[in-house]
Length: 102
Image 1 (cartoon, rainbow, N blue to C red):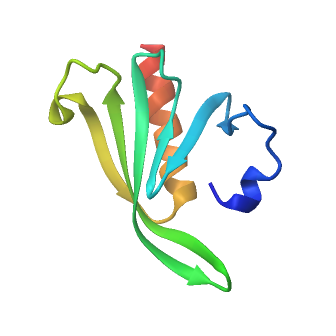
Image 2 (tube, rainbow, N blue to C red; image 1 turned 45 degrees about the vertical axis):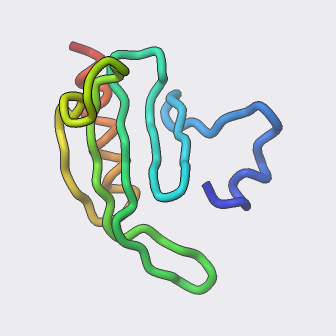
């Protein structure tokens, strides 16, 4: 999250997208609720600077099982790369809704 995006949030509030938590830590984004069976992880692979803003241009997306007993490779259900954060979040949302619905 950019610091300007955080300014609108009150202490203790989290950023959400379509009713699910969206958390950024460095170049990683995590989408979904920690108590559900699946989550989406997105890694910003490349970015470019447009004026004073750093914009993601290549993002890796993974649908993962939310099970701490599994090894990293065993958690991955689906994987893809997209151009830009919007396209990555769009496909990630579809994957997550589909996985949680079944």
